[in-house]
Amino acid sequence: MTLIALLAGDGIGPEVVAEARRVLDATGLTLAYEEAPVGGAAYRAAGHPLPPETLALAARADAILFGAVGDPAYDSLERALRPEQAILGLRKALGLFANLRPATLFAGLEDASPLRPDIARRIDLVILRELTGDVYFGEKAQHRTTDGRREGYDIMSYAEDEVRRIATVGFEMAKRRERKLCSVDKANVLETSQLWRDVVIELSADYPEVALTHMYVDNAAMQMVRNPGQFDVIVTGNLFGDILSDQASMCAGSIGMLPSASLRTWSGDTGLYEPIHGSAPDIAGQGKANPCAAILSAAMMLRHSLGQEAAAARIEAAVAAAIAGGARTPDLGGSLATAAMGDAVLAALESGAA
Ligand code: NAD
Ligand code: IPM
Ligand code: MN
Image 1 (cartoon, rainbow, N blue to C red):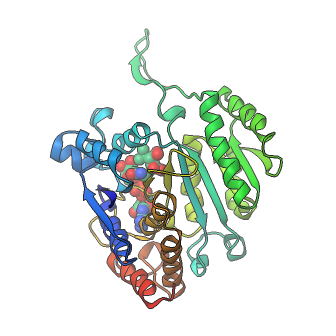
Image 2 (cartoon, protein in one colour; image 1 turned 180 degrees about the vertical axis):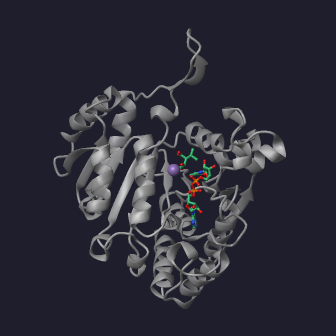
Image 3 (cartoon, rainbow, N blue to C red; image 1 turned 120 degrees about the vertical axis):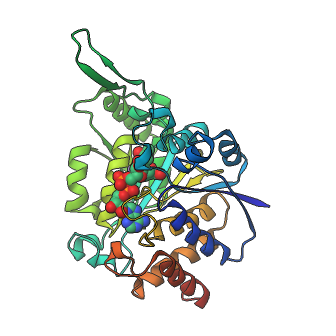
């Protein structure tokens, strides 16, 4: 039987994962779930944010549905024990180098976007973020210089094979969409980015049907609010992709709407699925979180890891129908509680409106 590892984590993680699970259950698919602690919750229970049992469950599951990790109470622990190390450790240990972060504006959410409706309406892009390299995983430390000043450093690096494999995913995705790939880097300043750009250009010879462009990340941030409709697939490194995807989410109405898939092959086998948002300590435990990003992540899981395209599309259509019908959590300008938003999606799914 298909095994889903449910790693709900901290803050609003458990609140949004619970709604995603209700929606999965309503698809009629037979799925087995196993839960395990992760993040701050795991540190509290077991003294480590990613206990070996949790990693083992993730490794043997067919797919992982992840909530969020992060707890301000643990922000001053030594880095290796902080909640965030759990998600970084899972990505690295499972080799999940390709992070798909699709951003589209659901009809009706024009008002939630700070962009003008005619601009917001055109958002339909995927940020393809490299997820296991870059400054995230280079050597890092703080120390004292010989003259006694504190200094911190984080080494940013990419090897050519790391760039080639993520760029390959980018070209393959673009081929199946609008055939436009924008590689975002900072090649005017960073050697890491110059290598990135060189490798992407070399690879482009194999994809004559894809229109490749390059953009510096500062300009990309500006273009994302000026005219996000210009983008189809954006391929970029770990840090730039992290930042640009939060920005894209708001252009599309809310960070509570953006799902993600973290994969290790282009065709997709075991993958980790999570909203792009974090544990939102400011609203945790209040029933205010928007569960749509988690629900849409579950749909991506059905599509990319479980071969259930029809059920994935039904869930996405149910979210669209709920939104079109006026269902709104506070982040979208409404007043529905998390579970009530889940109810609205379930109602759409069950009424066949989807
Ligand atoms: P965040 O994404 O948790 O929250 C940013 C803002 O967006 C907050 O105001 C929050 O209330 C709001 N928000 C986020 N998700 C929402 C949702 N589903 N519905 C409604 N509003 C939502 O980012 P942060 O505040 O910078 O970080 C909080 C903690 O989460 C930190 O510990 C951080 O390290 C962690 N984090 C974890 C992940 C992850 O697990 N993958 C991702 C990002 C941040
Ligand atoms: C994300 C988060 C993580 C990241 C943190 C929590 C390590 O911001 O998934 O977007 O930076 O990758
Ligand atoms: Mn992030």
